[in-house]
Image 1 (cartoon, rainbow, N blue to C red):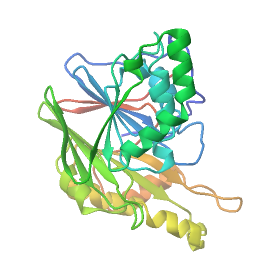
Image 2 (image 1 turned 180 degrees about the horizontal axis):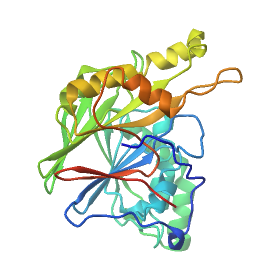
Image 3 (image 1 turned 90 degrees about the vertical axis):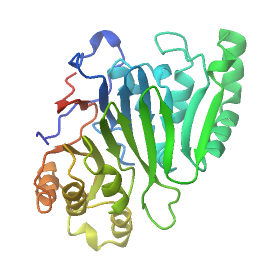
Image 4 (image 1 turned 30 degrees about the vertical axis):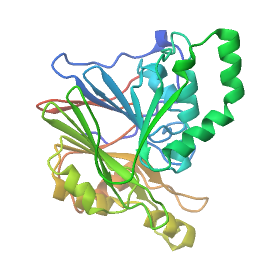
Length: 320
């Protein structure tokens, strides 16, 4: 599997200039890495966000910086997302929510959502969305009065959960939330498993090495896991030590993959640290460290890489 980084530049905003990703007719379960980055504002890796398409349903897990831009690049208008699922409440996973919610309400070609914006997340989702409604109340009032946009399309429907278990089930799709460990003070924090037509895709969310990811990722077609890495010199700095301690190193992720044995292991939320005197680890460094504990199929995720899940998992790299 390829793990090299493709430079995709800044987002193109015109549908007519987009590359059409090849889709096989025999697969209607697809996963697209909308954003594979971290809080670092990189143009090649937007904020954490992952699109799951199962039949005619579209789900987004997290909405980090620029998520609607990336959705537009793969011809998914923001208004066509059926449910937004949240893993936790760090800003890099939620900063794209206002754009997704508000832009998805606008007329075509934005999708013009005509039903409430549906959010499912752990405890805290209601407070988050209530505060966004207050923050954008004037914009909403203006657009209803001036553009006659349907009020029901900007309404918000929030479902919260406080323990792991099935949080969504409809038309053959079952989505299970499972608790992960992102740090003693960072609670709640969850990952998700999506089951559809006898196949499954799992996303870890932000987490340290965690047995729950192995449990729910066991035998999955696709196991998408976060990863963080810093050069040895930076690991002497307390601030970097604290950050890495809240995430999973490549060696640790390799252990997760080895024990879970997915058809394909994928990295997302790729956090690579550097400063003026220490170069950022390369993707080759990342893969080499992973290979110390894992020898199976591995893909270092890039923004807009997609995966068709069927009898095999087929990888498509986005080409603008």
